[in-house]
Structures are given as structure tokens and as C-alpha cells.
Amino acid sequence: MRVLVAPQEFKGSLSAEEAAAAIARGIGKSRPGWTIDLLPLSDGGPGFIDALRRAVRAETHGEAVQDPLGRNVLGQYLIQAESNVAFVEAAQANGIFHLGKDELDPLYADSFGVGELIVAALARRPSMLVVGVGGSATTDGGAGMARALGAQFLDEAGEEIGRGGAPLADLARIDWRPPPELAGVEVVVATDVTNPLVGPNGAAAVYGPQKGASPEQVDILEAALVRYAAVVRRSLGVDIAGMPGAGAAGGLGGGLVAFLGARIRPGFEIVAEATELRERLARADVVVTGEGSFDSQSLQGKATGRLLELAGAAGKPCIIFAGQLESPSEKVLALTSLEPDVAAAMRRAAELLELLSERWAESWAVPPSE
Image (cartoon, rainbow, N blue to C red):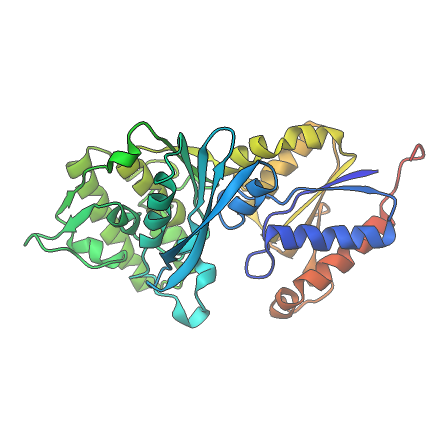
């Protein structure tokens, strides 16, 4: 039996690499003779660089950048050896994992550090820049990112507005000249979402609450992003308000399109191509994937849902491990079946995932020829 173990992160508990390792340990305990092909996945958010680093020959570079609250953190990016493509994971700077629950600041969290990572990557003169977005603590439309690259965001009096999403309500004009390092560099946004910047399915309405925004703060951010989109259209000639994917990472997707001329691609596809996922899937007898919460969004472009589709098309059985389930499913085994308390299950995620994998592998019916 050859098992492709390809989970994404269990948000708040395990990275994709940690989840894959736990699953492999569990399978190995009950089925030591099985061949396990480890392939941690990402759709652009946290784990994007880790997934690529296992698949492509690349140099890892570190840079001191600002987190969503302006504190220094170490961010990493990759430069692929053969193609000279730069890969940046935005969450290395603006990821919500940098903040404790009592530190969430949805109105003023800022993506400036993402711009600092991009500046560092561009200094290496890449042929292409791929920015994976997702898992952010920010809802500033990528304004902070652009500010780090030299953009100025001015109010009616010509004064620079503050950082974060809420101050965008005072935006009147944007002064922007792309840095010379951008010349000739193709920029790609890797994201798993198709949400527009504004509206009922936009960045503030859908993702603001996940970043700590109250209903009143969601309204503040929505109004600020509407203003921002209007000024971007007037100053830069780019309409990002209803653009699919512009709402990714609190509007960072739209900001990258507006300021860097980026095009948006599914992050899953970028990782799948780099890791030769389809070829490895073809060689597998069964596929095991997983994520922290399996719900309706999982089937809307996220890595778990896309892998389930690919496995089905290839005629391969696919088992999903999840921290918790929105609704019961025969294909999904949840950690909460072993530990009903969600908080406790998150704390014990690695242990429970290993145990659940061991029990699954022991009960899995192996074909007679095996």
C-alpha cells in the first residue's frame, strides 16, 4: 500500500508539516509495511513556503519585518534556484498567528511587514514574484504593504493617514510610483478565496469577525474599504471593489493587483504544480488529507476540497482528518470523536491525530493482492 499523506495546517494547532508527521506516525504504528509519501499542502496561507521548500531547490532568506502591530519578527522567503522565482508568504509578516487573542486589533492591524518582505525579495532581482496570501490579522486592503514600497496615502489636507484599515475612511489621494526593482517582474497572488474586496461577501464582512472585529467594527472597515476602492480606482485606474480574490487576506489580494499589477491564481494550483501533486496522486493507493475545521468553505477552493476532487477524478479513495466537523460525513474522521471538548482537542491535536490515524490504518481494508 502506498499512502499519499497531504494535509494542510490545522489552524491554531498544527502546521501542515506537523500534521503530516503525526498522521505518518499513526499509520506507521499499525501498518509499518506501508509506503508513506509525505506532502504537506498550502493554498497560499501559512505553510506556503514550507510546502514549496520540500518540493523545489531554493535558497531560504530571512528578513526582520514588522508584524501586524509593528513589532519586529523574522520573516522568510524563497528564491528558486533554476527559475529565479521568489516566493513570499505574507502571513510570515501579517499572520494572525503572531497575535494572542487579547492582541487582535482589526481596525489598525497593518500589512506593512508584507511590503518589507517583498522589498527584500525584489532586491534579489527575481524573474517572478509569487505572494501567497491568507491567514492574516489585517483588513487594510494591502495599503500597509504598498506603503512599505513607497506609496503615500493622503487625506484631504494632504497629510499621511494612519496605519490599518479604519484610517482608510479618511483617504483622499494616493501617490504611487512603482519602485524600479519591479520593472519586468511578473507578480502572482496565490490565494484560496474568490471573495471581492467589499460587499456582503467581502473582506470585512466575511473575514473581519475571524480577526476579532465586532459587528460595529465590521461596518467601520467596510465603509473604509469602500472609500479605499474608490480612491484606488481614481488614483491608479484599477477597479478592485468587486474583483474576485481581491478580498483575500483582508484585501491584500486587491492591493497587490492595484499596486504591483499582480494576477491572481489559486494557491493550491501553484503548490500542486511545484510538488508534482498529480503525479504523486497517480502513484498512490489511498490519499489522506486533513485540516482544522472541515466545513462548507473547505469545498470552495481550499486545499482539502481540491485534493478530494482530484482524488475522486483519479479514482483514488480519500480520507479526511479534521479537528472538528460542521456536519457528519463518512469521509471525514474528527479529532472531536476522541476528545469532544474543542479547546482540549486543539491542545492535544498531534496526539489525537496520531491515534486517529493509527486506528484508521488498522481498520482499513487492504486489497488481497497487497
